[in-house]
Image (tube, rainbow, N blue to C red; front, side, top):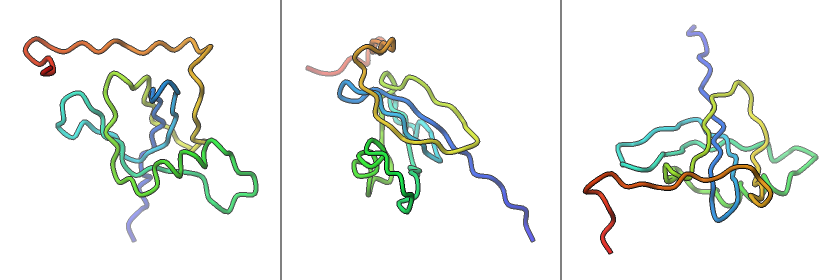
Length: 113
């Protein structure tokens, strides 16, 4: 019998529409697409829990049916490999001390106007 290999779990924090999203995923990669980070296999708490966090429910609804989300690299604040799943949440960025990084295009890769 093969030993069970624990699957990696990542907590990813990123800025989306003026709010900080904190989600848990099993796979993080660049998928060869310059300027984006690919998030796959979203992990949310069990639906049978008695206490339901409305923020996590909103994220579960927003990412239901999403196999892979491509997040702009400049929107990501932090990626942590964690041992336990936490609660996915949306944090208002007002009053936060988190400042998004400006996005700088390398020479010759500026978007066409």
